[in-house]
Image (cartoon, rainbow, N blue to C red; front, side, top):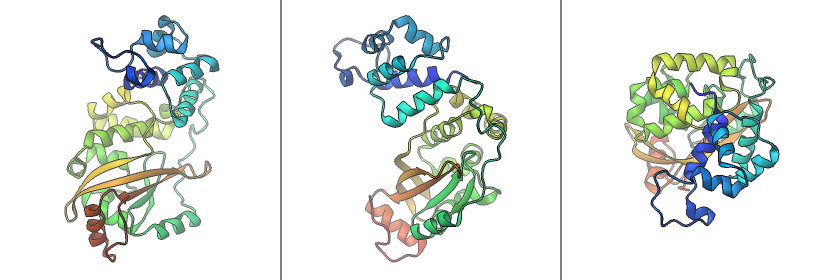
Length: 282
């Protein structure tokens, strides 16, 4: 498994930036997606050799000035810049703040009250292990037929990688698997004893479906997007999701799903038994 998360992040972001986005000519035939290393080096004002060393993990402590130049050249969003900074700190032995701390599994009453107000939207609270800690009735009605709640505690990563029903529920299963690996890799990853144990389990139970992604998927999951979902009763759904971080003390996330189109809104209303129009498409 890769321990070069900084290099992986830089390479995947470099390959995601098109020459047109940074004002470079696009007429020449290109053998690599996105920017070449030489082009990134020119934009950031560093040598090609230095970009190569960073991507290969031979240099893991670039200066803040170099990080800023690379972030500018790669057109990184604010959240990606923060993540880039954290990756340079993760090589230090001191970045094990969560080490052996047990992931919080208690959900504060105020957060549960927020979940109640979110009905009938499918919403769920998860911790850094992707364990399901609390959820709306709407979420249970959506996910129960997939087998998510057949085990206790329900765990999103374990379910997606080891339950065949998840591959039917998610037409874009590969994208969902990428997202969950990125979620687990945030922060210390294997320096967190509890995440390391889950990763060891998935290495055995899921094999290359999991381990190949650990080596190739950057550790920055998307906080918003669209998920296609197939429900045995409601049919094909398009769900817009938002992932909101709770306080640092909670170390938990709130994931809210909303219908991305009117047919999905109607289907979820019928699934949850709510009046038509209880949820509107976003």
